[in-house]
Length: 437
Image (cartoon, rainbow, N blue to C red):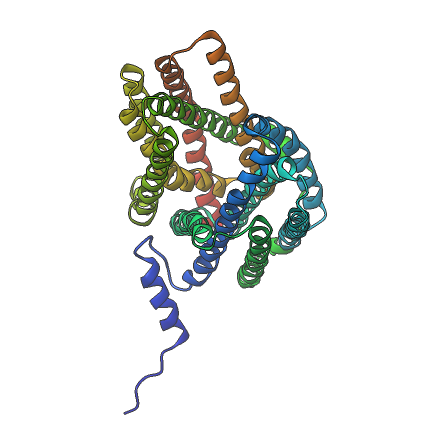
């Protein structure tokens, strides 16, 4: 008797088993999940290559002061970017929209690479561009994923996609360290990676469009801008306030860490080496812990406790962390607090935050999400910079900054309470609609 030839369903089952280490998948779901995971892996890899390329350009052609003010410039530019994105969406379906935006960034990168090869002073514009590129492209990816999946499947698949995001960030920095590439090469490599990302998006769109009976993949978006969609929906407003306050807290926490580190470095024989080694350890710890959480913990929390409970875990840790720092603002304690904050943020918080959009209207997933994940994120940076400016001007101690952050975390938790209630209502409504269909 001849051996049985493996069937296509057997292949899919094997990939389901592979992904089950991260999250539960159902038959024939794994192919799309793998394509999307590779997509976000490559996207984050490209971003971190560009992040490495931008640092010498901005510091040598703008200086540290100009770099610190760039968040305000990015916030202002993102208002225009969001209106332009909404204008494009009105005229296109989702694949044409993503293709147009990705193609725009690819062409930009080729242009920047040519200018960098000619040693043109592109530091400031490239720094602003990278910030816009990162927020826009990552938000667009998660919008596409939220459009592909419904609320039930998204809660299972998003932890898998998060693994691709975490590994991509690590791979981008590791690749550059191994190759020591120049800025033009990094830009061209990133442009090539974006071409692959676009090909993967096309593959997923065609695969899922064939299964979609509603034909939404071919539908154009409505005429409203992202700001209009955001302001007319209390659920979206609360998501926006949550993201704003969270980013405010996170950036202020980074300042507390840097301020404490600088004071400690002043007592060392080689301050530069001390800071360099400390930061390397800091990045390594929170990236490593974040990746472990994403692979082994995040999907279990979301599956058994739910998205709403997941949202409260990070601020609970932050409240405890900054409360302790306000009592004893020593470097070791601040280090532990920020490692916990960032590792939870880049794993659990990122997955839960994106899962909130699974129950939003389709237009909001693309246009309002762009406003929240770009403009409001950068506006949180601006608020943190304003707090640092005012605090240093009036002579705040490190303990005072920690107390302010503790109060902001309480505001963060207060915002999450009505947001969780509305998410529950949207979840019930989505389940009822799916059952009726």
